[in-house]
Image (cartoon, rainbow, N blue to C red; front, side, top):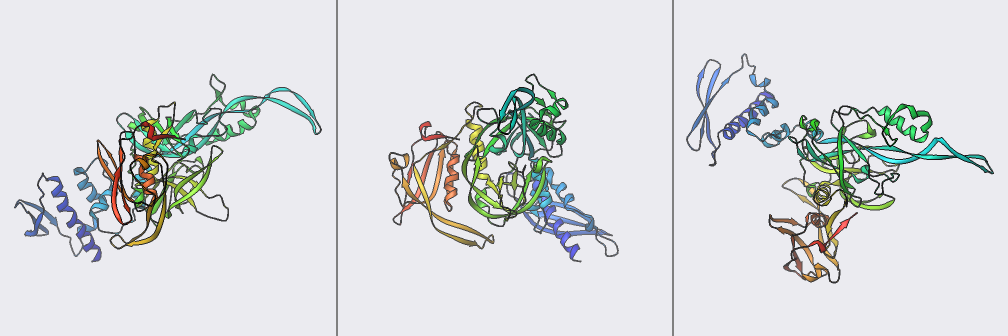
Length: 512
């Protein structure tokens, strides 16, 4: 009986909604009543009366011998009924969240949505290796005769993952967000250490022979044994066959300081004929400890795979080594299992929305499942700056310099009864102002508590309430030339505000 009532409730909730959306106009029309107006055998007729006095009738065939026909109705049936009135990218998960007041394990649906935006990435770098076929001479040492070999150029490979940030399926174009360190190698001959070739695969399209990569690694250590196993280009470099699913991508630019890079795919027939989908980006400021965290990456270069966990800490600073230098990054800490090859892959919430880019894990053997992801607000804002500013030669992104240092005071956990979640709230104040900076010119003072900031331009105003220090820092990644920034603050228990003039090129610096 409970099953019958539950399914019946779903149908009752959904059918009127479907009718309203199919026949809606600019006026808001709602349902006034639903009445059974006729009955013939097992067929009942119901009439829906709307607030504009229009009516709609539908029939229901009752079950036989106490059985009910609704036991054969599935969520997919209901979804298929209504999706015709929805946008093209409307998913089953969107339908469940919008219409069904039930508890459903949506991990599989969320993961499938994430998989549509996932790519695995293989990066090639030109390197120098010992040429064991080229003996230059011999050197006598106290330990015996040393053979002096020449060197030759070869290629190395690295594997990672990425997410489709924006997509034009008709043109076969896409921008891919990944990690800077996926694209970089300290052994590369290129001055900037960036790879010379990037190959991507959509989920299910991986067609590279991993044995070839293993042979390449061995060849680079002892080229004499495996020299005849590859074809070579005009420069004498081994050629790797990436297979039928390979999609060539171009490096647009990246930032070591944020560990974010952007690749571009152009005019790909595989993209045009795929089920690929650009990610839906969630506001990472709303992510709290305990949020579901689904990682989609390319672990051990074996193809796109999914793991699941939760966000353990919603904001933490870690130190990583990139390009032989230490970089401090703000990250989510997650307990989602990740491995080598997950770097650059997306971290998704329980609805399949992007909340971060996976980039690190602890190397302490005494700690398990402590991994990290760059919050989506940082990753996508840096990526958009790269797209806006990088010309393929300079390969630099930019950020505004206002001349203030902030500090956090009165940090505390707050329980929100409306949504049933705990979050951290901080008081963010100015601890230092640089002389002759734009902050000093507009009248900000040490001790000012920043309540909100507004980014103002010709397109409108975007406001950020500052309840965490990182919200202010991350918001500045959106500021570009031609914008103004308004600060709303509390000073000595009184409210005030000040606004920058229109920002120009001199107010920005390049980011490594």
